[in-house]
Amino acid sequence: QRPMEADDEQATATATEGHGAEGEPRELGTENPQLHAEDIPELLSGHESGTALSALKDGWAVFPSVLERYYTAHCTSNHQTLHVHSNGLCLLGISPDHPKLQPPLKVTSVAFRDHDSKNLLTNDVHGKKKAGAVFLLPRDMICQVTVSDGSTFVVYACVRGSVIEINRRLLDNPELLGSPSGAGYLLVLAPKLDEKRTIGQACLDFDRETPLTEPSGNAKRKAEGKRVRTSSKRQRERKPCWAFQRGNCHYGDQCRFEHGMASPAAASDDPPASDACDAIKAS
Figure 1 (cartoon, helix red, strand yellow):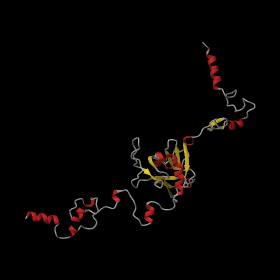
Figure 2 (tube, helix red, strand yellow):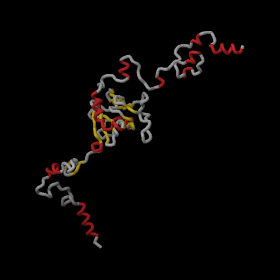
Figure 3 (cartoon, one colour):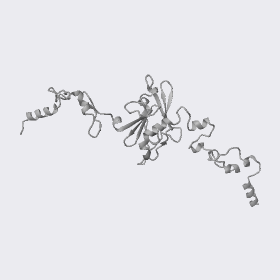
Figure 4 (tube, helix red, strand yellow):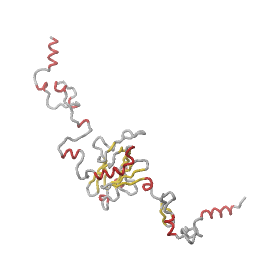
């Protein structure tokens, strides 16, 4: 058997390989007197296939972050960011250079959309096909952000997609919004399969369309004096109630049809036609 001292010497030599005599890192290029340290980045600028290697700092490799490695970043004119993963999912957030996020300003609250059928707080996604996910259009509002000076600004979806989840940490910690670490994203969007490769073009279309300073959607319809579109059954224009017009609607205020003015049958003193017929038959 080999003595234990020999194994210790071999382990020490392996641990200090690539280091100086006292175990400190050696400067690259000192092994070859004809190779200088400043020439290393040019020589290692990429593989034969063209894939770039990581940068060097003090002789050590500096690897990119997860966002830089797996996500493609897009930014819109209103300082919204869209990080597209290699699988097609999108992280929607706010750029750290947003004018409302510069010191001494800070975010005090993030109010997600919850006033209509596209309620993001009650978004319930389940199953392989993400059933129940809210589908958003580029001009749909995501949330309203309040800043410490009392001002607010609106965040839009920018692209078409289904909401997989929202970042509920922003409800308790709104100051995370816009953090460079990526923890302050707003929501995860899943575009349609045939639109995953055109996210960048969708961001350009979002900037090229009607400016955000001009009203759109229901706000534009209100300005033009038109009826506001809504998917809520309660707010739709209801049809007249025939039973109420005959004077025998038993639902009252809970009726799903429009009662309008008082029924002609109730306003007159004459009995309804159906009651008169019953009286004739009884006689």
